[in-house]
Image 1 (cartoon, one colour):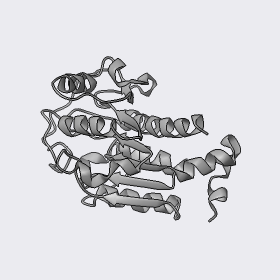
Image 2: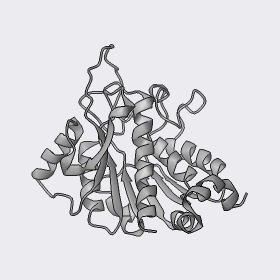
Image 3: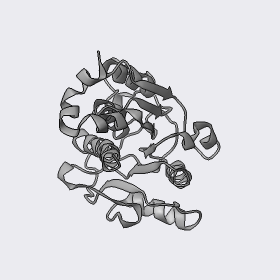
Image 4: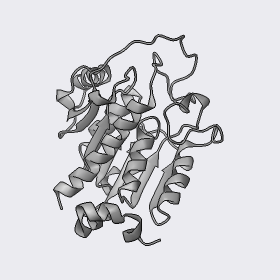
Amino acid sequence: MPYNELFARTGLLIGSAAMKQIASKKVILFGVGGVGSWCAEGLVRSGIMHLTLVDSDRVATANINRQLPATTTTIGELKVEVMKKRLQEINPDAEISAIPEIYSASSSESFHLEQYDYIIDAIDSLSHKTHLLVTASHTDATVFSSMGAALKLDPQQVRVAEFWKVRGCKLASALRQYMRKGEKPAKKILCVYSEELLTNKGEEVLEMAGENSSFKKARINGTMVQVTAVFGFTLSGLVIQDILNHT
């Protein structure tokens, strides 16, 4: 099906020149869980044609309440592969690359960040996230990041701010503390966050972080789709708005 037909309503709103710019950009997204999966959906439905997905995890039952690739029929499958199939059903001509790996200091060079126009961080591991944000900030790409989406219920409290100006987010605070001991990002990074902070009322979830033991977290907190999806769609919206601002 022709690109112009698939995205007729988008083109009507922003014009053909902007659509061509959106289609030309290369985006890499780290993490396709509760936030990243919705971001990927938003990007492709907005006309992004070149998207690389990075996530080593497989779908787990506990993902179903908030993650786009998670259904009772996809449990055990690689999230990036489930997402790739879905996104190519939306736009068969889109170039979707699925990389089932973990971003880390030791693997960072393999992702060739310098070849992308946009780098999006939606990962949970503090050390990996810190390294990604610092490394990405040294490329020519525009970088966007998701802060913590757990322990929140109100999507109307989701906000956007520059990394050093994010307030009321424990993850952002931990990242800044981590960075003050080492290297800091070389340029400004816009982040999606919420100052809302609730507490878990249910019984502790006895499950590894990353849902499939890809890394360990000190604690697993409750999350709900109405917040994680808004985080993800806000990230995708930041990409599209930035492209429009430079068209």
